[in-house]
Length: 238
Image (cartoon, rainbow, N blue to C red; front, top):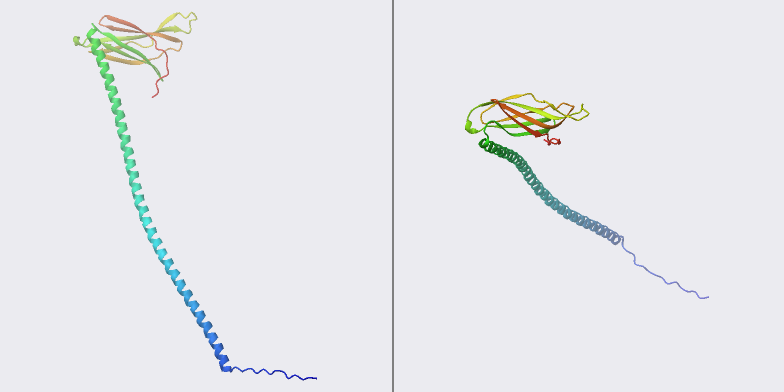
């Protein structure tokens, strides 16, 4: 039997002081590392906070400029609206004035043509004469316009009577024989050079008008003219 002597391992014992020193060094290293990380985090956080504050200040300045620009544009828009309203009022006023001027010009042209007609008629008239007669259809019924003239050279006042007679057919007569119906009483006129006689014609319900006979009596002189009844048309819109 062989006996083997076991190897004897001798280990150097570490002093407790050294051990505690290493522990203390580790703790200090950990504390310092944590402190370093904390300080770095604070530095980074401070950097980002400063950047955010700078960006916020820039944004506020831009917003302030935009508000100022909006106020300026709003003022310009309000001014443009007022100018547009004033322009519209001026345009409407000018348009109304031009329309009124055109109406007056048209009226003056009509009167000029009327007086030319009267002057031309007076040169050929030998006494009181019927220059023009018209029957006009309106919404309220029928009206007439009669123009009487006499020579300007006579230079005197004339007294006359005008009588209108509407002739036509009566619905009461089956034969359709023509009948005469007075629809306007005699009217006295008094004029020196010319006169415009206007009035309305009230037609009986049983008469179909065909013509109007105009009779002018002045100083024993009688002038009679017959005019066809106009075709009934709807009155012109107003």
